[in-house]
Image (cartoon, rainbow, N blue to C red; front, side):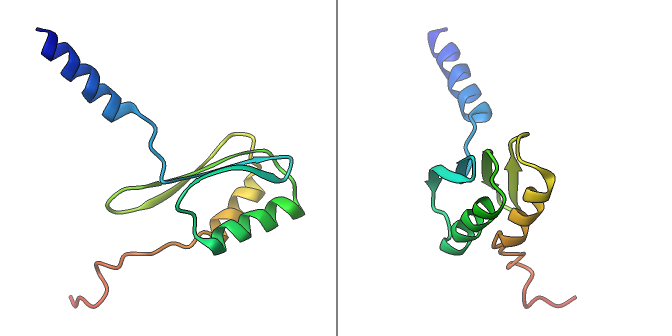
Length: 101
């Protein structure tokens, strides 16, 4: 019975644990925390955006088998979100490249 409870807790942690690939935290236009393997161009672009139009908030990047998703905190303005989306280096679907119909 103890093993079932431990297994249930372990499965719940794996399913509900927040596991972003990259995290950027900005406060008043300055990058205060970063984690993950962040591409140099994306990091430089985000710093430039934050320097020109200061904002506070978090940018998280999630990746699964098919897509890469950017998630922003509520404090990031929509204009800034679009600019960060524009500098993000999407890989696209490399699996479909070279296939014919």
